Amino acid sequence: MKNLLKLICLTFFFPSDVILSQENESFMSDHEKAIRAVNDGEILTLDQILEKINRNFDGRVISINLKDNEKGLFGWVYDIMIIETDNKVKQIRLDAGTSTVLSVISGD
Image: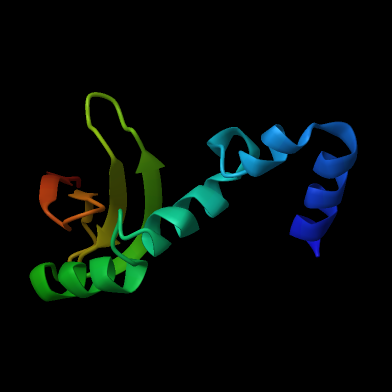
């Protein structure tokens, strides 16, 4: 319904060539951009990422953040924080398209 209202408003206020470019990311929320990236095969699903995290790290996921075009990187990056069984926090950065671990930062 929300998208329908957006399309109606766009139809009324903007010429048709602007409406056709609705896929332009300036009209999309971060959530919509992420969904589009998953649907286009640009990034892996959260389930696929969590499967890798659970396979390779002990602990419980406490935070997940998906970033697009992070500093110096091209593409999407998942920042995931886990708390290990000894209550230490670990921040894991993964390439969202390949699930390659980019960095691991351990805290106390």
